[in-house]
Image (cartoon, rainbow, N blue to C red; front, side, top):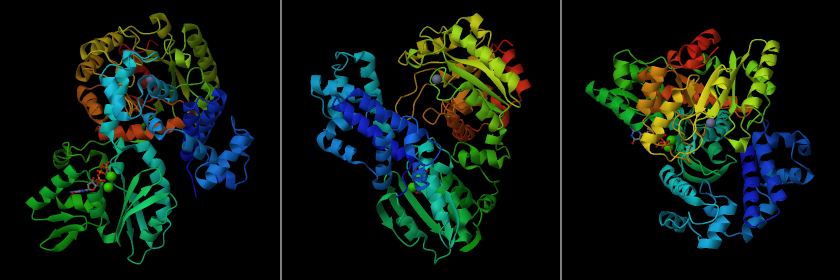
Length: 578
Ligand code: DGT
Ligand code: CA
Ligand code: CA
Ligand code: ZN
């Protein structure tokens, strides 16, 4: 029974939550949280390590006891400790902990002081202003709870693309290994690189005798089979993710792929073009007078209505059909176009790898540059950099750059934009850097006007280069703050600074529509990983997906530029000083 590292981590995190809820020894709680983090950060699959006979107790933070529990979880999908905890903690309180921002401690207080046991009671208490009066809560927390509840209601069960990929990729490989199966692709919103997906739509081509449906229905990770026929099946994985499989003949591949990629509005637009030309377009092919004239490839479907192939990320009926007709489809940016990454963290603040480890990994990946942009002093929780520690890091980067070949580490900071728009570090310190990302990490609730003024004021500072995660949203827990983005973009253009597409899967900020606004405004977008570990450099892949949904081309992206040109751009506006 192959378990993902994430599933094992989830067991430990849940155990830690439940232990904390019953006020267990804090060291014990922390041990489980550490184990969860260690396991989910592992590059290797724990199941594979166990099979290979590797000693899990050699992992940092994992002793014999935890190693035994990991083996137990890998073998049984759970562990006896968790089962025991579940039987004697209140399920209602556990459910309350699924509200973002509510940990065990707060849930206990809510229960003790206000007798809150359900989400409804929680919402009522928050709306009634009763939560702000509790010790350790306050008005801001109450607002956050209301926002989180609203976001939860809206997002339903949609899953972020990055997490969906962890489930979809092994499943595709599994199906690919079926006799008689030719192509296996994920279609739907996943192929369009939407930031969240409702379900996963897999399309396979196979000969009629292929046992692909049987093999799909017997996949290890399935919780329930919802529907099953000869050419299609729908299942729910243990993670709760729903997967649709459709099997077609090779000859229908293009038509089926186009149909199941969607979006629905795009499909309707294409079908209408077909109708005007006397064609019938469906998932089996393109037909004229009952005669099949196209459908083996997607290209042939588009060609039947006089269009070039349209990249999936554009298929939202947002003008792509008209652009295709006019021969003006964008040449979308690709991962290989990126020359480097302009937002990363190290162990100096909340990163998990050292400066040297980050640089070495960026070098290994063939980057031309990597900007190190740790947090500034204001962000105390992560031990943000004060001028002295920042300047020490600058010296360390100078030394490292003398030694590294191929890669240049750029000196940067993710400086906090304070409530009044001032930056968290003095100009003369920022002047020593190659680039300055300014970001908001507090006071999300200001009025639109004040929030906008705050950003504009920050961008007016002489060394400001890039506005980091410009709307502050977190998927799925935090709504974007209220800000006049068009005005911010106009100001960025005027000041010669740039905006970020933070590619962290929880952020993806700017979103697709915002990217397009930036492009229209002529403001270059920096597609950044916001890496907190070497593995997070993989985030760029999701940033590229989002950028493509925003119609961005190579020339619209700041970090597709070679280093010399990047330096010129950073220095020509307000940004940079070197
Ligand atoms: P999701 O799953 O909510 O993230 O979004 P999609 O786009 O993956 O939607 P889904 O899974 O319901 O359907 C997959 C694709 O199948 C969809 O993008 C277009 C196609 N499709 C589904 N239902 C219809 C329909 O009634 N008419 C047309 N033209 N296409 C449909
Ligand atoms: Ca879908
Ligand atoms: Ca579906
Ligand atoms: Zn940040």
